[in-house]
Image (cartoon, rainbow, N blue to C red; front, side):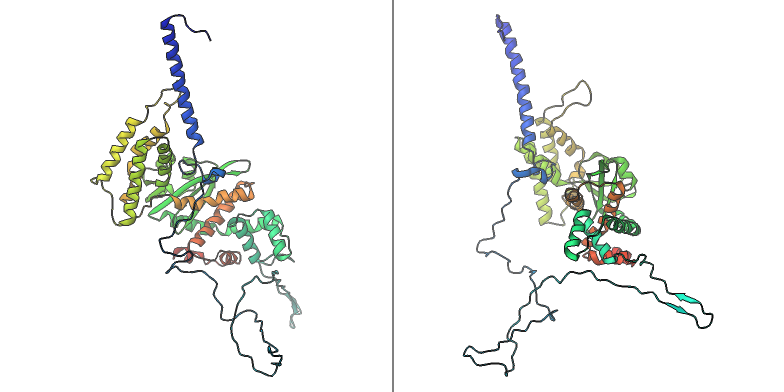
Length: 463
């Protein structure tokens, strides 16, 4: 590189180099911020943290407290049963002095019980159909088999229920389910049997799914979220609308407004919807919206770690409001409250602190992450603060995130869904099982009743 010969040329070169240094510094800052992102300061899932994930140390107990269960804590240890399945009598036959004890009457001194697994074996029920000859007309009458006994050899309702439970609730693949059956019962259940069980459960749960959907739509507050899954060689989306009592999950080829309008509860819903800042949710203007505080806190944390002062103040304000709601459950935030005005002041500081948008030759102006977050906080102020203004609205959207997380576990354990109908089956059965879990019902027993044709679910869902 040749240096300029004149002083003016040197000044021009310095200005060019300074501009290049500033541009590279911004690039370094932006890339370093990307490298520093984790589940605690961004929307990235915790599974992406890898070995950099922080170790969560157990909380220190209060001064003077011993380790283990504290006074007043309800324990969950084993308790003796009144009558054991098997009794092993331990009777001494000879004294330490050598005398025989055979003629005495032993008295029970103590008991101990061991809880163990029984010997695993499939229970085989044989149906024998007889024929009789009528003494009057001499016709031969043949007693048909029950409708559900359609083959010479087949699996019963209990096996089908266990297949559906292992595939959906415990996320096992067909191969692992077959291996488990072989280890437990000595029978390797094939893929066709498993596919038939899931298909039958899917068809019989159609009215139950409709009832769950109606119950969710009738709730005052509903949580919504979505996640991507690999299905039939391409990306599909699973959407959830859930409450503390009901879970409604469905799959769709689209993520946006089309998917939310086809099968969701949103077109006719009139309550409060808790969700993240994804724009299609706000297209339903007849719904009252509440934004997830946990998402906002993580984004603010990322900005705070990079020196943002307004982000630290906003994060502190949200934590203060959340703590106040916890200590004073009946307190409600109003526009006249100082917290409301403090929110506006922090937004004004954010507008001054964040760099202005940079115009591009094409497309929208490029904005910093901080300005993008400020725009959302400023535009959706009422949705951000609704948790403090409406007592039945929670601070986070954890309900929906917990209800949709098993889809990721299923994908990691069993791989992708090979067909769209496979995804639909999983979603419908999972909605049913998740709702049962929330209502403290035994999933295996309820699935067995389903395959046996016992429709006892509508009273269950309405109580």
